[in-house]
Length: 455
Image 1 (cartoon, rainbow, N blue to C red):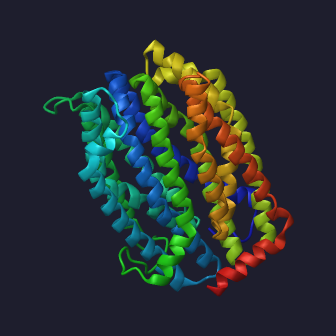
Image 2: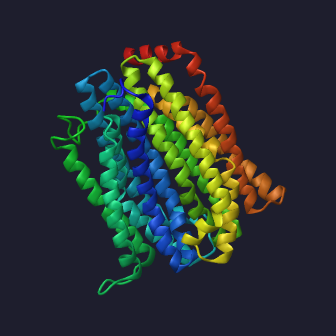
Image 3: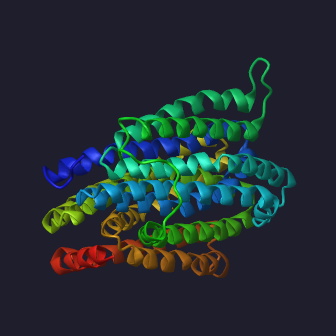
């Protein structure tokens, strides 16, 4: 899709809807696991929720190749530079495969120690979480490289195909989950291990489908391969484009682990509630991430073509859309929290605590969406340092604020959740302040463009 001409709002929606759909499908993978495992009790959910943090960390690390591909391929598409498109696509995929293999092997080797960091007192949960994590780590090369494939297709304006592939994988996962978790016919019940096997098998099938279509006549970048010896020039640019954001996301995951260890002081139930709540909250931030990716691609192509006015229009209209989404999700979390939790954790105590979690997080949804959506502007320009600095600083502040509110002010586990909301409010306000400066500073866009072409 050529995003350098045509209706701005229509193009943002046309590009973002499949991306959002893809995000929701990826979220539903976890939803499906949580919903089925919830029938086994909160201990099973706590085990999977604990292991999920390391999947989240890996996902954050590998985002450098996804974002690098989106920015590099979209900008070179705007410039009609075929050679650069091929180089960015091949290099990003190669780096993704190498990084995911290394990370997966590290997680498999150190899984018991990694799970032990949460200091859960229930040894059965520790053992279950360790096994689940090791099984998931064995398939990380598939799930993380699928992200990079999606980034390449998104950069070319084809966000529909990743959605179709990942949605097809979800259908297979939903079929496999109950069979492998609870058993059927000659297949034994495997609990959380079954959920892990279903996820890995599904991601492997999606990976093979991506490879086949990528290399076909309908591939996003004609003539591009999957593997190449990473050249220094394009590897550096991919790190430049995606590195700061990946660092931010990785530190965010690490901070979240510390927060989870603080929550674990109150037992397995709050951990289970927060694990499910994080998946529910993904309704909000994955929607925002879809619009952010669409804005990044839109900005990247128009940046490469030197069309700053369209960039400004894209920012304004995407911001308005994000604001509407934020208001809607805040209302949903506040008024329907109990109903939502009944789907995943039928225990009355979990429903009550989960409702509290969503009400607290609901306060900050609009600010979180502002932060995520406006990050797409900077990613599209290849200038991801500012959103990364803001994100790292204020996400890190969650830890001392959580300790202050939960321990010294005796707010309990609710104090930890309020620390998340408070930091999100500050991050959102700062991103609005700095993001909209670009609307009044055309030269900032042009200056960034001249620096990029100089490279």
